[in-house]
Length: 497
Image (cartoon, rainbow, N blue to C red; front, side):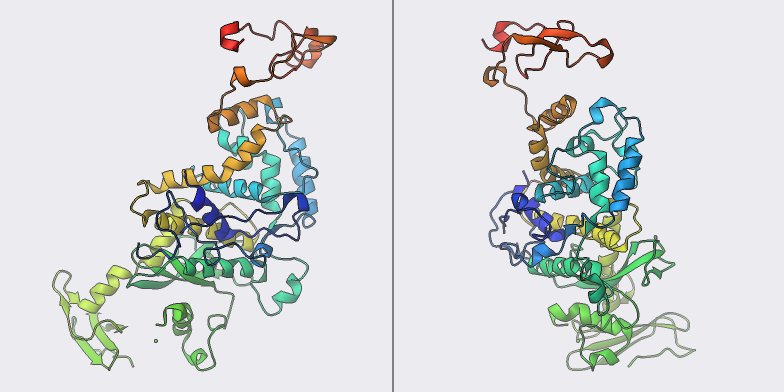
């Protein structure tokens, strides 16, 4: 289905750490796949999602794999509280489906992919803020696919212990970088977004507010944003496709000009932001209105490369624009405004449109950790960017964004479903549901057959424990002891003998 692209979308956010993964779970190098805006090697492959996270469309380097980890030793008290709270709940026998691993702290790439897949499913189902108990409910009101992929305990444990840097060196790095807990993977994400896309003729620079109300010294209040409180990201996007090409997180005073030289830092903060974001595309005084300026007054100023416009839309207010694209006067009769303003209005909504798309299908769950809030937004952006890349190939099947996200989520969780389907320690109901989702049904002719009777009597596996019913018969397919009351007859033709 979306195999090649899923590898790419996963790599946007990821980077498993060899430091914490046991040798038996070393990550597998992933293949990459490669329209006028797409910088990918092979334009003829089927069903791509994206290559947002691959580095130079090749193998992920070992340095990239150190950007993200499950910090097993960190926050162990929180994990213990989760276990105690879960044990106190009354759960049905069918929910006893925790994975059997050498240690509950071990994880691998397949499980991380499945975690991201569940987050994408929650975005499609609009259940990203839904309580985990409701999401994993077994009374028919929960989401079956969620329970099939992993248990509630495992899901909460992975979310609570997700980290994106080395906590041992974090204190030292935070002296020079206030974004140390997320900066490595964020910068890698942005670099790979640049590598896989060529911008069109118009780009938009604007701010995006990632909703967050926890403790963070650079949390901001922006009253005209829907979330009002959160972390500010300055973004540069394609005005037409809304693809995120460059961005940085505002981390306090004087952080807009971190990558600029001494001369560029003398400019105002908005100018510094534009210069910093436009560096990859090699982009760069006022006409003030008089009190008695006529509404609709238009003034132009020309240099060799730039055009400056002053337009008075209402009394005592002037709109000032500078353009390196327009080199002569022009007026748009359709909107009754100068052409420069009309063109600006048609291309200014790139970041706002991206923010809206991220809000419609959001993976963000409630959290008190700001790096995790940023990570959720990176997941949302990766899904938008990969959908842009997917639609850039004419041979791909036309899909709505909701269907695309479902396909993306399914491809991410499929390897984990395959592994759990083969795990006999997981409850029969869960494995049966997985088989139904994967489209696998038991072929009785190819199934090893056990003898009819046991050598000694054993307790029936299906009967309630209170009955303590002993039987000499066993199931021909799984070999479990089973009494005649719990068994069903099947003819030899159906069985294949």
